[in-house]
Length: 209
Image (tube, rainbow, N blue to C red):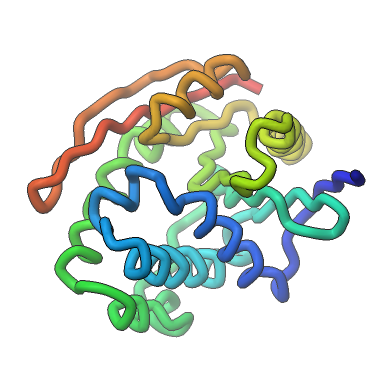
């Protein structure tokens, strides 16, 4: 089966968001705050779709295709990246996210997400050429086949070609930590995050490229 890597096109944003929603379905990052599967999937898709739409351009979106079908997607933020304004998020339909679930829990999730990213954002300021992967997902149907390893290698190569020297991101899964350690990543921060009475471990990792 043919495996191809490349940049995501604007017309593929929805397809990429659908893939990421499937990949995050049983991820503690979402299940803690949205235990109901139907609500969780609605909120997940609404958040991810608008995140990709709003950041298309400022961030770099890479994908893997197997026989033309999306099997992996990543949003990479170079050191020069600046988060879009609230107005830009509104223009891309962010307020519609609140139609898909409980507003209080959505706000709690957003606070958690912001806290989880702090170590990586702070680390990006410590030297030149540090990139941040705000999203890196592989379709559940191909996990365990080696595609994830190849996709991470492609992302690393892309960053090197753009002059990047290091990649950082966070995960909330011990299983993921074991996978990334095999690929040469090291944990540089671990913390317990709590919002709305729910807690979650958050590991931030880095690798020199």
